[in-house]
Amino acid sequence: MSSPVERFAPSPTGPLHLGHAYSALLAFDAARKGGGRFLLRIEDIDITRSRPEWEAAIYEDLAWLGIEWEEPVLRQSERFDAYRAVLDQLRERGLLYPCTCTRKQIAAAMSAPQEGAPGPGVYPGTCRGRAFDDPSPGDDYALRLDMRKALVSLGGAGVVRKLHVKEVGRGPDGQRGKIALDMAALIEGTGDIVLARRDVPASYHLSVVLDDAYQQVTHVTRGHDLFDATPIHRVLQALTGRPTPIYRHHDLIRDESGKRLAKRDDARSLATLRAAGHTARDIRAMVGL
Ligand code: GLU
Image 1 (cartoon, rainbow, N blue to C red):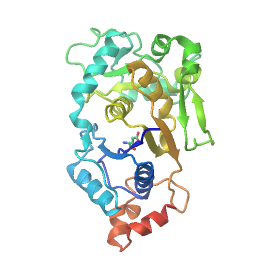
Image 2: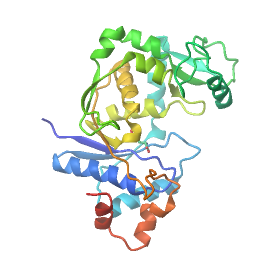
Image 3: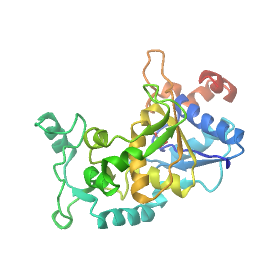
């Protein structure tokens, strides 16, 4: 087997905490053990929330942990042209539609469920079928993937069922091994996801899939919280002809009350722990490595 390419892909929107350290160390250790490569990617498509000082803090924290990554680091904010090119192709294939719904409108439509409507938390499809010349020029809109059309274009239920992802970690319910895609779940439980936000020509799902392929990532190590994103990523890989990495979803690091750590949880940030005198070895012990 060829050597693994692992990556850690934080967003520079706040301090890294123990959960990030766990993810980064697992990926780094796996790359080392397999004689492979470890890459760092700065996921800064959220240009309003990303800050250079948080990016600098990421480098500082990871270096302190003893992690080494290849240079240059890939920044998603420098990849907008690549994302745009793929969006144009998907649009030409008739798989995208412009969505002018505001968050408020979506919330209102979701709280008034109708018969035949998708599951809770799923975009109700208000703008589905809207033509590209429909929004007035200058109108802001997001681009959504028409999930039904996308799955049909992949060959329909029979073919979609044959698409799978390999999980070498563990899903939230213990899922492991070859996990097949479920067309009904994608239509009803996932729905028409955003591929380009109003403000940037990308979304989390699109940029992750394109960049994992661009960086030739073979192994994706990330938390359980992203487990449900993986079938979406598999669909996008199939639609755009990108390879599928092996996935390892790991447990989340929780606080004493069982709550998962968040970026705003400053007390457990790596910078705070470092300032309190802890060492990189202490951090490894705290996350069970
Ligand atoms: N940027 C994402 C985060 O900060 C992680 C992306 C991924 O691992 O797929 O949670």
